[in-house]
Image (cartoon, rainbow, N blue to C red; front, top):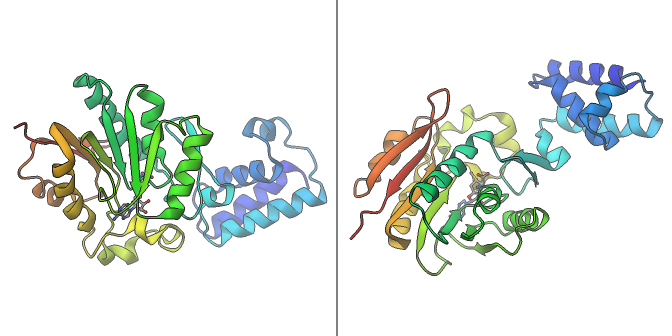
Length: 282
Ligand SMILES: C[S@@+](CC[C@H](N)C(=O)[O-])C[C@H]1O[C@@H](n2cnc3c(N)ncnc32)[C@H](O)[C@@H]1O
């Protein structure tokens, strides 16, 4: 079979199973099976697959048909223009989390923070802290996660992307295992409520790590603990930035009553994505 027909057939199968963007998914699986890029697929649609290539492609298509996310099959996801390794030990980095990075950069630049001390709580793949490392040459960067397996992936990403020496990783509960004060705390914590479990996409529910997705009945458990911890660990005038889940903006803002300059950053569709707050200067 040639490349074009094999992709077409796979896209049809994926679409029949309700898998979205089926053509793109089939192409990505073909790229993975052949170890080539998209340009190669488009340049050689008529090229015949060897028996071994057909077998490899069929195997990854079968995996995708079980609902396993594409990124856990290919082991890669792009974030902030960088290619991150991902495994089922970490949440797949989402494009909306780039708003958290953008907001942190805006604050560091607006406040003209020199050698800012920044910590990322719940680093997962390390995407946020590594993206910050790629932008802020003089920042002192740390990151925590409660999952040792996630930290292994984060360390690998920092190293592969050339920032292994720039970020210190800690295995701990939120900020419990870290010393010193910070200028900025960033976090994309788990924020889905267990009460919404049935509404969550099957791929997320069945394949992404529970500890990365769910946070108590209403999704607020980590915010409730992180906000007072961040208050204790931020310098006077320091900033807390947290990604927020759909529909919990008000509840999160209510937990920030003592803070100043509380604001919400929305995406281009007007969806609230990040809450920003400042520790009142003493
Ligand atoms: C939503 S994921 C975010 C991962 C990554 N920062 C991103 O944006 O893709 C949340 C992360 O928080 C970690 N986590 C959950 N509870 C934690 C806790 N109590 N202390 C530290 N990390 C925690 C999870 O292991 C997971 O890696």
